[in-house]
Image (tube, rainbow, N blue to C red; front, top):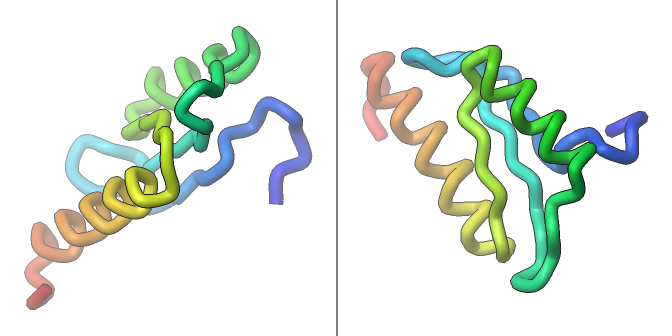
Length: 79
């Protein structure tokens, strides 16, 4: 649970490949990323996290599933 107003909505500390983890900021179709939120997202990118701003639940779900599917596949798990 986030303690900061500008912390991304979803952070997965699950490294694979070149990524240290996955970060997702959820927004509505019209929602805007604030300057403070963008600073936080840029920070995560600077430490090699995969960062996405998703405009729907379905888009966010696809990014999470894709990330973990690829991670498991790369590590030899049958998926």
